Length: 511
Image 1 (cartoon, rainbow, N blue to C red):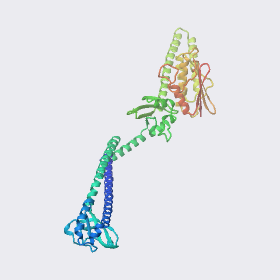
Image 2 (image 1 turned 180 degrees about the vertical axis):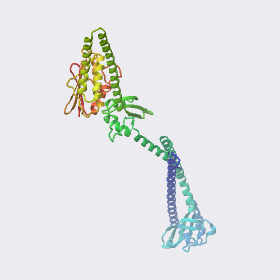
Image 3 (image 1 turned 90 degrees about the horizontal axis):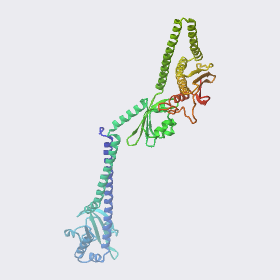
């Protein structure tokens, strides 16, 4: 039985319980009917015996010369009309005047007559010549004295037959109830079998154990939503990734404080495939799919924060490589110019040209390296300056720029400053003046970064830090400034957007 499915075990248990209940009910009903039938028979025998004892014919006959001749036909007629099994009229000494079996007439009555001789009618169950019976014994009075006794009774076998006739419909009803109960139990067990997959309790317990272990072990986030977009299950991974409250289960997704873009996608009931969504501190890859016939939605989330940061650093390194390539190309051109001047016999002009170019390049390098304590950030500014120069944009670093060691992760600074400069260069490249100004100041409170450009600025109602929003054509933009906003929030800072000639972004980061 241990190998039986939970549905089969439940079916067997319920059938046994229903069978026992029906059998117990039928037995109790049988006993109740039997008791009532016996009481009814006793009352019927008593009423009949009293009626016969009160008959003038009986009173006269028992004191006459031939009581049997008068009373035997009379009692047999009454017995046939009433359906009792016997009517015996006897003398006070118990000598029978009548009996269903004529051979017993003249014999002594088998039963108790003491109370009847004292003038009291009574009933009893006694075994006489016809077997066990329920009988009544009533005195016959004449002139105030007992002149005879009347006994009427019904045998227990006759009562049992009557009970059987009465209980037969009850048994049929009980059998019908048992059949209906078994059928209902079978239907319930079938439904349970479908819902449990036909697993035995031990196997079902193992599956639940594995299910719980896997949910708590995987780092990826898993959320199950019902048709009303309420959370029915959330594993440990998703609680960490989305900072869900302890009572998240049972709440709608728009009550959990999730990013508006993610909430809108989840409420739209459209499937997501590797979509990027930003929270205040993380970059998440979200997938969702519908379960069954719109039973709900399964949502999985993967943390891409570190990967996105590494991607940003890789883009920065690529920028450095492109800047080195451009500088190498420019250095080759300058070297060719110097060699040509020497070959033309004009060494003084060659020296002047080489010294001037070196001073211009060295001035920016000295300024950046001297002002920025973080070497990665210094390299970023130099690389962005070369990249902007290639695109015809003048990247100007404020002479008062100073970035000290504030305890802010270099990765966050690269994300913030790199994306702001990239967007500023893109905006300035389409303008007439084509410049970008960068300044940074270290204060007692922290770091203040300012990036301004000569572009057209941002239109009214802009949402630059919302993922997917962009002024650029195409659907591949709108992530850089969203990452800036996320990095600023992660560092506990603020970012403001203003306007001068073009857009001005001001970032304040606490120490």
